[in-house]
Image 1: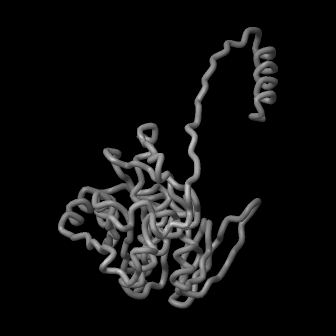
Image 2 (image 1 turned 45 degrees about the vertical axis):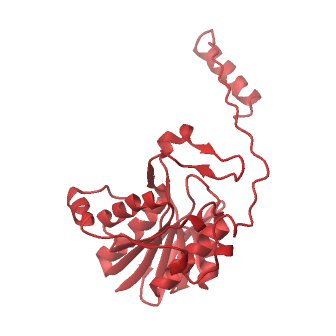
Image 3 (image 1 turned 30 degrees about the vertical axis):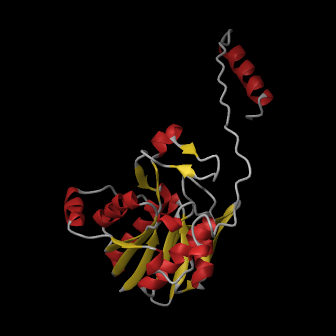
Length: 265
C-alpha cells in the first residue's frame, strides 16, 4: 500500500474574487468573510491520489496550512475519500510567502512520517507562483517533477509519467519517493457524494501549531518570508461599447482591424 501526502490550499472562492481586498501594509490577501474552497488544481492532486488508492491501494493524508476555518476544505477532502487531514494553523504562520509556506508544509509532512508520493497542484488560484511544490521537495530532499499531465505506471520503486514543457511534453521515469505538481489535464475531479459527507463528519481534523513542529518561529509566517511586497496598484478596468455598421463582410473586416490595433490578434 502506498502512503501519499496531498497538499491542498483553502483559497477564497474565485466567484467572489471582486470582494477580496489586500492589506496595503503587508501585501497579504484579506480573506475575512470570503468563503474558502479547495484550490482547483489541488482537486486534481487529490484525485490523482484517489485514483491510486482505488486501483493499487493507498493511505492518503491531506495537509493544508491556513486559518482555523480552512478545516472545512479538509473535511471535503475526507468526504472525497482521503483518510486523514492535518491542518497547520497558528497565528505565527500568518502572512507567509511561498518560501515560508513550503517550509511549514514540509515540516508538517516530516512530522507525519514517510511518504511514497507527495502530490500538489501546480499553483493556487490566489497566488499562482508555482513555487510551493518545488520548494517543499527541496526541504524534504525529494526529486520533483512539475506540470505532470499523465501517470502511466506506478510501482513501489518508481513512477512513469508525462510532464508538460513549453511547446511539448517529456516522458519520465522517477524513483520513489518523489514529489509531483499536477495540471488539470491529469484527471477530472469527482463531485462530493452524500455518503462521503456523512462519513467525513465522523472524522476529526488534526490541528498542528508552531509548537508541534520542529521549526523556529522566526522562519515561518511574515517573519520568515523573504518576499516583500513593495508596491501595489489596483488594476483599472475600462469598458467601451461600439456598434459596427455595415454588411457581414464589412463588419468582419472592421472588427479584425480593431482587434489588430488593440494587440489582441
